[in-house]
Length: 267
Image (tube, rainbow, N blue to C red; front, top):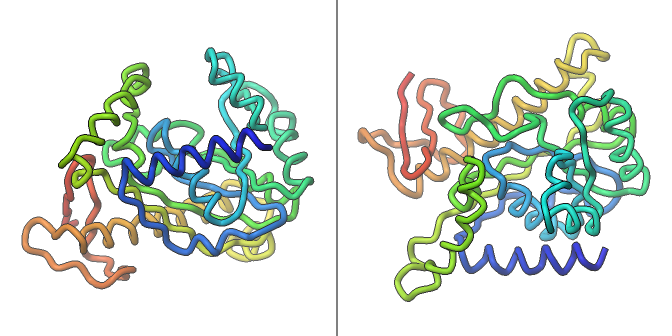
């Protein structure tokens, strides 16, 4: 898919100018073969960041995208020409996921957001109500799932509706002298790949899709916690608390970077 490769290369270059980026363990994404990539969903710009991370791993991503996006002028044409997959939420899960299974059968990397929509949590944490499509795909295709946590994409495009679509125009302002020093930080952390056998071994009922999906989301939240500690270590922690070295195993103190600053919470 030449158009996809060119498009992601342009996005990658733009992100390099407009943001500060940090990637952890991108090498954990298999260099070849079928793989399901799951990530948290903060804003409409998330796929740009994830596609850029996949590019660093030498992979092209096929994303599951809500069907409504294919009706947007220009956007729909681009999604179809780059091989993205339209998903209708009102369809039977088996039918809705068949195009993704076909892509996995060709050895592609399929990216999916288990939350099914941009998070509505005030602190941008992953929602508890998630869909089981990622696990269905991995079990049916007998391929690994790789959790990818990212933080910072919501600073590029807001999670609100139409207002977020015009915000990219403001990026040009960052190119003025003195503005690049205030570029938002975008951090991506890749977790260990989980095989179907490993996934089944971590739940009581090996046929319980929701339990297996919960395992994946727990791994994703753990990665996000690690990112939170790392950002706190960089920027300091309110209240005089000293974060431990990254990653953290401390259960009594939880630091999480809020929308525009670092916020520390002691349970």
